Image (cartoon, rainbow over all chains, first blue to last red; front, side, top):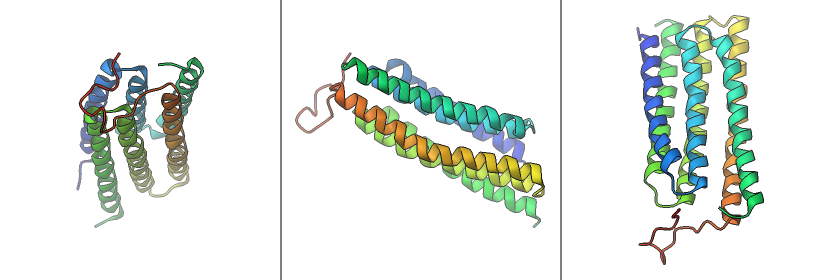
Length: 91
Length: 120
């Protein structure tokens, strides 16, 4: 029998490590566009980590709404940043 | 071999595949030479990886509650997140591409291969 709690904890730790790697691009990326890409990648990883936390704490019905809100917020944030960049006309 | 073991094995397969694609997208984001190449890597890989991980978690939640109605409803919510991200990820990628191209970010070509394309 697989110990699923420990498996979810391991996958969460791996995803957080990848999010820290993306944080390099979000801080030191050469222009504002690279920083937007890095923040979006961190957002997609955080969406999965939230659901894994809900399974670890056995409260998935509460965490799934937070995850929905986070997906919507990530999408709208990227669109707003792109629109603002296009309105400015230069990087 | 009860149903819970089958659900756990399916979830493990889906989650590890999603983690593999997340790793590939992150390596592409860190190491490719240009903004457009990085966006190409992360957009596709992260969309597929989010789909795989969310389907795996929905399967585990449905098996963990023995297919009772509240657990099935939570799994349907997770599948809704997957469908939304399958539509929203490419849209945000394309919007950012278009904004960067209209702002004059130079792509990486053979002519400026040994120069730094995007400097501050």
